[in-house]
Image 1 (cartoon, one colour):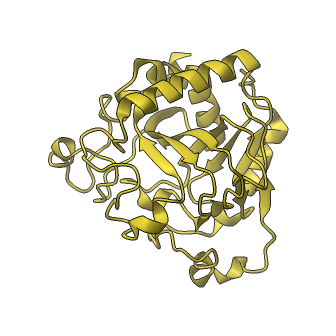
Image 2: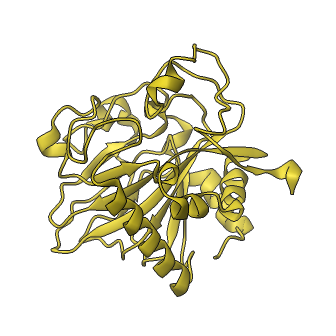
Image 3: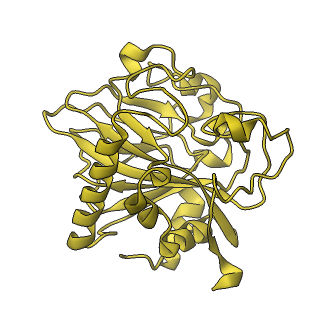
Length: 274
């Protein structure tokens, strides 16, 4: 695993809100990740996340048009909670240290993992932000996105609006069908050139949760599979949004409570413990 960040990569992330790391996984590691993730996905039997009966392709209450959004990607969340193999992958302290370093924090927790699979001929993923969906508000929150297949211009690679995270906010404008809907909220980025991030399988990217990003349609007959994980700097508090929190935990929280449940959001890296 290529887990040592260079000064140039850190600087690029701080400036642009994303960074691509080529050949993050070795060939052997990539094969292990593929087998582990696919086994976990198969065992989930279409259930989108633990504790909720929503199936892949059904409305999640955020995007009501299941017919359209069900064809953007298959999304399965918190596989680490239902599969020991994925838990081992997600709890890798080396990845936790990378996330903490890029976020500029000493301690970091998993917010949620998710498998994101674009099926053949899948719809595009419109420009959007991540953090406004989440149950906390932190400008340093970020995600890793690991390509399990080659992510190409043809099958739906990621695109980013560089530097956008410096100006975006926490209001949740959702994910529209139209690719340009985000620019109704942030018109200052209408004329900013996006940056495509095609990646070989085994490469990865990190992006800030307030970086405007999206993905193209899958214009091929093959899958574009990725495994991702979102990270929350330690010490964040509940902002009132349920997001992926299970009902039994959600009912114990009030706005302002610290999100420090190791069962739900485990601390995977602490600089003080190094």
